[in-house]
Image (tube, rainbow, N blue to C red; front, side, top):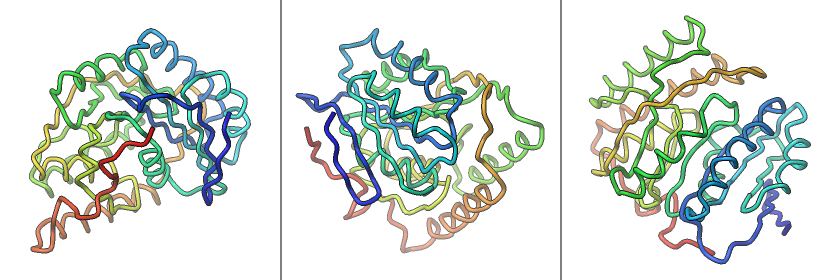
Length: 267
């Protein structure tokens, strides 16, 4: 496999003759108990659909456990897979952005590494994208099986706050999502926290992109521990408030002359 070094990124990529139709992006942090199983389940679905012309982009975010060792063992087993490694923990926000930058697909889908998302739902997401029914497709957890009561209420309050701030009606901001590449060719991503997913959604709405929600099963975490904490949640809340103030000002422009992604897709 080809090895490239880009600052803090070490990318291993199996070359493809054509730009992929869809890129699956997964940030990974302290998931040594989940990532091998997650990849096996993901590829069990992907291998049933060779017509999709897909790639998988994994971002290892300086894990403190054996996640990197597991990934280096697992990634060579799979085709069309890109592994990006951070020398130190840079956070979910930066990991997702690095994955989006590396992705070459016309469409992109975010999938968590914690095995809470059911990979068998992927064909439903892909079919909606293929039909052009959505530019931004949001999975909505109709069951939140893993959540303690406290975290559930925090999630409800956060969703209510964002909907109130932005005068939109979104039922789930931070679950698996899929996007048309053209969204990122119009918007700039400025957040530095978990707010990155809500930022994508709201800016897409403001630019008139088609945003659609579909029900998604929340299986619950079976192994390992979530890295989410009050500091991370506080940073996301702060970013959401700042964005809310900016959005109400005359300076706000949802589009950008320097968008997050260029319109050209490298092969």
